[in-house]
Image (tube, rainbow, N blue to C red; front, top):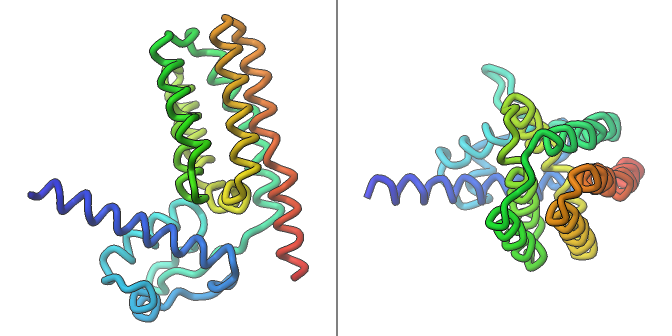
Length: 219
C-alpha cells in the first residue's frame, strides 16, 4: 500500500510540473512572475504538497528561481541561456558514445522499441520523456558516469525549451529518423559514424527553438 501511494503522489507531482511548464511556455505565467502557491494550487485542483514537489522539480531544472523566504519566481526563457546550453550536448553525447562498447542485439532492440514509442507520442511532455530515455539508454554502458551525469544535468535544464520543439509532430518524426540512422550505424559496427550522426541529431533542434524564442520575445 505504501508503495502504491508513493507512486500515485509522484504521478500527480509530474502532472503538475507538466502543467506549470505549459503555463510558462504560453505566457500564462510570465517571466519574473512570483508564484502564488495558494492560487496556483486552486487553479490546478491539487493540494500544496504535490504543488511544492513540482515547484522544487522545476527549480532544479532552472524553469523557476527559488529564493529562501520568498518562494519561487518564473525564470525567463532566454535566447542566451538556450544558445549556450544547447551547444554543450553535441560535444558531450558523442564523447560518451565513443566510450561505449558496441551495443548488443538486445540493446539495439531496446533502443528500437523506445524509438517506436517515441514516434507514437501524442504530446510534448511524453515525447521529451521518451527522447531522453532513448538517449540515456544509448549511453547506458558509458564507463564515465561523471560525463553521463553532466548530460543528465543538461537534459533537465533544456527540457522547458525542448517542449516548444517536440510538441510539434514533424520534429518528433525527424528525431525518430535520426535515432534510426544512429542505430543502423551501430548495428553495422560503425561507432565513428554513429557519433557523427548523434552530433548532428543534437544540433538539429537548435534553430527551430531559437526561432520560437525570438518570436516569443518580439510578441
